[in-house]
Each structure stands twice: as C-alpha cells, then as structure tokens.
Amino acid sequence: MCVTDKQFIRSTIEDCSTCCAACQVGCPFDIELCKTSAGVVELMAAGTVTLAHDSGGPRLDILTDFRGEKTGFLADSVDTYASALEVIFAMSSVERQNMIRNARESTARFSEASFEDKFLSAVEPLLVDFN
Image (cartoon, rainbow, N blue to C red):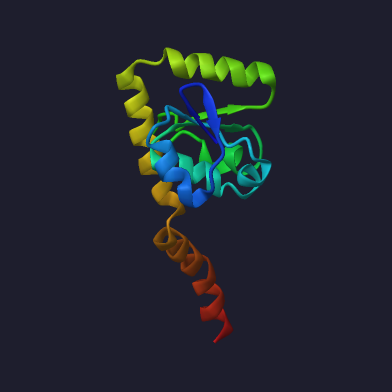
C-alpha cells in the first residue's frame, strides 16, 4: 500500500513503481508482502521512505543500516507506526532524499547477480571437495 494524499491505495508488486511515484511513504500493510520481504525491497527500490513491520526479513537484513545510514523504519504496534510516521513526515526534503538514495543503493544486495555470486561462493567449496 502507498499513502497518497492521505488515501490508501492497494497495489500489486507490478504496479508498485507507478503507485510509489506519487508516495512519500511506502508501508506494506499486506502481511504476505511483509512475509516474503519482496514488497519491502520493491518499495525501497521504487523510491519511498519505507516503513515495515519489525519482524523477519525487514528486521534481519532489509531495513538495516547501509553504509552507516538508515534505509527505512520498523514498527510493531499502532504507537510505533504512528511515531515512525511522525518522524518521516517531519524529515526535511534533503533528509528524505538521502534516506531514499541510501535505501535504493542497498537494494543491490538483493539483485540476481548478488544472489548468484553469494550462492556460487557458498557452493563452490562443496563441489571442489566432492571431486
């Protein structure tokens, strides 16, 4: 979901980029998007300040600091979501753009090329020992 002019728009991952072009905050309320983490990464890549549930992938390796800077926000209750939204809407345009840039750059960690490199690095020693 994206927040646009205080309205909530439900969108698929395919439509996320279009939806997010008009959004300041990306917040995947759909639990399936949070569980797979794909929606969180898509929101980051689409250029929103991302606010996700404080669990699973978002907590462990997605909305983590990158190059010493935040990539988004985590929340786990009505109060923490509200607090995070207050902080986000109070951010200056420069602060918001810096977070968006950092989050976008951090999504390269989840690219196909990155996965392939890490997978081959992990499997290659097993194959050498197998021969």
